[in-house]
Amino acid sequence: MTRSANVFVTRKLPDCVEARMRELFDARLNADDRPLTRDELASAMKTADILVPTVTDKIDAELIDRAGPNLKLIANFGNGIDHIDVAAALAKGITVTNTPGVLTEDTADLTMAMILAMPRRVAEGVRIIPDGLDWPGWSPTWMLGRRLGGKQLGILGMGRIGQAVARRARAFGLDVHYHNRKPVAARIEQSLNATYWESLDQMLARVDIVSIHCPRTPATYHLLASRRLKLLKPDAYVINTARGEIVDEDALIDLLQTDAIAGAALDVFEGEPTIDSRWVELARKGKVLLMPHMGSATIESRVDMGEKVIVNIRTFLDKHRPPDRVLASML
Image 1 (cartoon, one colour):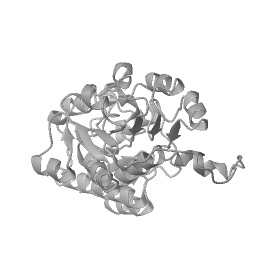
Image 2: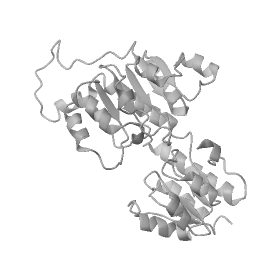
Image 3: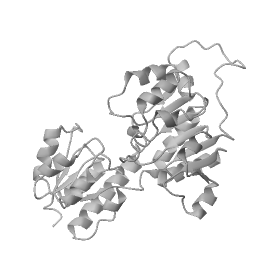
Image 4: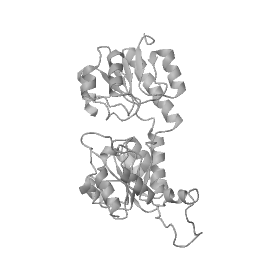
């Protein structure tokens, strides 16, 4: 049953994952890893039984409406589902799954690296010797950054990744604060020694670093817009490894250009892979650390994601409920 299923994979996956898919399914793979055009994606959805997209594939209601009658499962390779119109898919009887949990630790690791890098000016420092910049030698007042211990970290979104970041932050002496739709379980809050803020505005005004870990939904689009960003202290930093659209980039750029906040570290951007040229100029000035969406980019994470996709597909084909099914109540 599983071998006859027509599975279309939109991007190149780790070799071991693709080999397993060939064994189990009639898998059509993307050998050159070229992002599909909209027309190519539409064509795939007309003929496939199962689509395996990634964050680079925008699957909106129009594409779903044009999908062929055989498409019954969209098995997303990734945790975030903001690039898929899940409501439209469910309305057409198409099941949607994702791969939660497997990228938590890797994303938290990179987030912590960015939290360390900005106050200590690591991105500026690593360029000085390789780029042949002027280095006067050690000086008591040269390249001074900020101590991390004792600072206030505000976590926006206390899910799996937010909690993993909080655990790491406590080890570095940061005081953990968080804003969520509701408080986490008391035992989790106590283990992290974390302070819950019902008001995001009040938390932003008090923290030294804000790290974003909420999903991209209509409710979180530009959640950090100009008004809220202006609540941050002048020596505060913004860290974003979630989704670019959660932050109003124009507003954040304005604050950085006028030194209204100390800096930002970004792994995600609005409209990526297109990057606003103003970010590059700010990076050259040491105001921002820019990363090319590397939060979950480890071999282990990608293989684990692929294995979850395969489990979801096989469970679906066996007419059981996939373990990572996205429900309407989750939207």
